[in-house]
Length: 163
Ligand SMILES: Cc1cc2nc3c(=O)[nH]c(=O)nc-3n(C[C@H](O)[C@H](O)[C@H](O)COP(=O)(O)O)c2cc1C
Picture 1 (cartoon, rainbow, N blue to C red):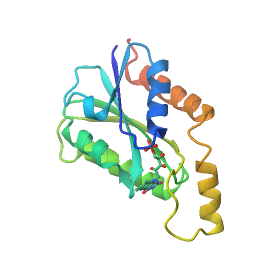
Picture 2 (picture 1 turned 45 degrees about the horizontal axis):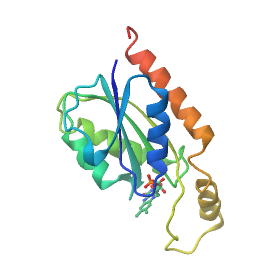
Picture 3 (picture 1 turned 45 degrees about the vertical axis):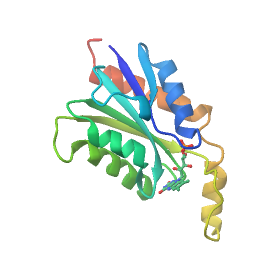
């Protein structure tokens, strides 16, 4: 049972998560999106993105749009709260790229966690936004890696029970 972990990462957050997953999942290959095959022959592909303007970043988006006939699970890092409407919007935007137009991909699930914003905010910070960015600056952390490993291990067992 072979796993391909592909990631797009501008400042390293998503790459850290990708590395933690590739280390935890047996028989897995880790590749940055620029080096990932357009149509991998692995049993499933995990694609990681960083949130950009309410969706997956450009490089991850291009990769997702190019996949066909694949079993895909997604992971991502973002500055927003992972249980927010904004995060749901990011998740749905990425998943949509895999299934519209229909080309035989199956979306198995998505894991999201916060990731430190490395740039200075352009707008004045409300207290709520400040609190969110202060928290984001602590992620991804060991608890995120553990949660991601548990998420994908469970997903793997559920989707590929024979292996
Ligand atoms: C230009 C830019 C746009 C961003 N847009 C969003 C966004 O729409 N929603 C969000 O929650 N975070 C957004 N972020 C925060 C990043 O997604 C977050 O910090 C992420 O962890 C960066 O991952 P990386 O280190 O792998 O590049 C944005 C960051 C930048 C620099």
